[in-house]
Length: 504
Image 1 (cartoon, rainbow, N blue to C red):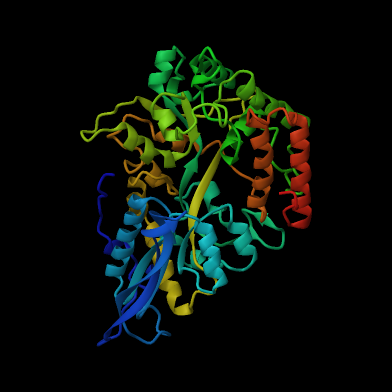
Image 2: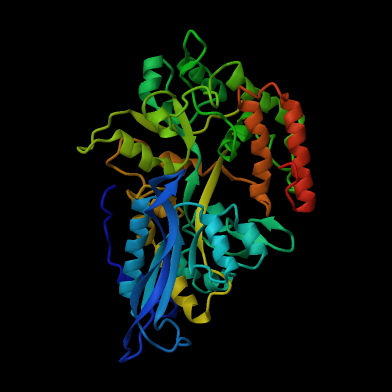
């Protein structure tokens, strides 16, 4: 991972209340305080009678020296806990940003809490203990559940107060609605704002161009700007190779089930099919249009044999290894794939071992082209003490600033929420052969997934039947229409009662 460039930090933080800066009291005495953070460490345990080294997540305590002061005086002696997930490189970036904010704001200490696994479960446990982090990195899907319970702070007053400083015009349009929830109407993307968008992006196609050239498949011009779904199918059919025994030597792309396949569902149906009805009151997956397109997906797996079969093809080979080794021609995913594929295909001298690039989603014959966008955000808990609110909000604003967004973007994990940064060299890098700008261009047709308070439970139902349909061992247990009918019945019961049916 490349070292991140730095700009002048102090000049970007407003040094008044709006900037989140704080002053310590004259003569304050440094006082040790014990804080907790969640880490993953190796421990020795007895497993089936044998001592083994295993990794587990534990809470460790450490002592931090902060300025002592009256807690009711905003920012004096304040410790802020910032929770996030991610790999070690991401954790180090968040630690650097937290340290810089600490250095620039006397009397404030930002401590990062790296939770690499089971993030939401552990955050729920902290809420249950009435001790959530002061600033939290969150995803949009769980937001309605937390906001409806009153756990997230209403951020509208702070955003309205600091609108000029935030430069709200410099955000991708839908991202300003992403973290809103209307309790009365029970609708996502409207009502009260409970978080600010941080980073994310749309789902597109990463193509292994060495595979395409070796197979003689036609590479889409202009990174797929005018690619059709017929072009897509012909190329994938050309790329896949079966051995004499019927096993797959090389496939087109991984199987189409799960939330990451919503762009396929939307595009291959020409925009006619979605998981739910428009008013979110019922499942829409048992319609004739949905049956038609899901039958196409089933054929990709079991008839056309374009996609690797679960538990049969490429067993034990990870998605990144399938892509890099040329076992598949393409992978649909977001900009968060960049760090993995760059590490796997670039040597110490910066030379590429695999020729790959990013491509648009193809178009349906009716002209529709859609993809799914997803963004993470930053929020604060409702119970955050008053004296912590300005420092916590100031930390969020720093990470949202042009400088903060550029720093986060250079890690390569995702696309920034600010178009000015997304169109800069921080994201569209001059030192790489791939065309990162395709992600920015695709925001014109990037749609938002339907999200409700029972989003996770809904996908538990959907995935049960997708797993049956696309697994070669169970594919004959249900027809496509019957699977979708049962899927819809389960989702409808969930929407009506708010509870997952017992059979799930």
